[in-house]
Length: 335
Ligand code: SF4
Image (tube, rainbow, N blue to C red):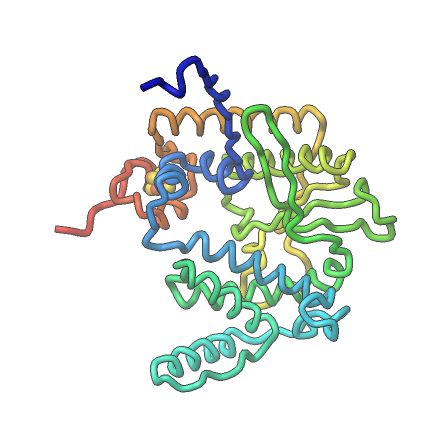
């Protein structure tokens, strides 16, 4: 029988190189904080038992996003130009009572009370979405604290900030030879009394933490993050933004709403050309390190003192890690 394929040669197709996408915060910032934690939860996808860190930051970001949408009438056109709750603030006790009543209603199967404010309504919507992904607040006090910070921000910053918001969740990315770097800027804010021009825009990024007591390495990474955003912004709009701003929301925490913005809440990040270049170099180096860690499956824990003790307290790997407690590790509670 003759061979029908005789004399036919099919050349091998060229190997396709798939560029990995790296998020500025979820990959680069997370790996720089602790490669071991990043490897376990972001690469190997182990499910963390507690997601307190993710909960607090995400709930603040997403509720504020709804507050901006409320003011701009995106959710409901009738709220256009209005602050959620008209900037009014519920007391700690009122917030606690509402959460207590909804908890009791859930237990008895009754219909719970309606949310007493716009902020709490948005908070519950966001929380339901997070809970469905397994991201929960471990302590009920954390929920009260989050609502309180959101109310303070809304009352203190809302009247001036919301009208200036030009875009939220502003997406940026750049093709970097062997990978794609992308990021999401929380807010683009027009400078007051200026024309809507990309060169007049400020980039704002919310952080769920405090500025006071922040680990210097974390602050440096956040500054690099904003400079990398500035670089990506220039690639997209052809100009640098006017300002890059970090807002530390936890600085608003306290028994009463601060009458003025706390001095440590806002940090303006300088954007000299040399600093931007250095930030890009650092982040590219970090991406190379992530690639190397993937190749060798080696994920080093952060060195003692280079990571916030609170980050280690919330980490499931702390029982088997020498870094927490200034390098002393965590005492096992059994046998
Ligand atoms: S306990 Fe701290 S240093 Fe150790 S893996 Fe977790 S976050 Fe990293």
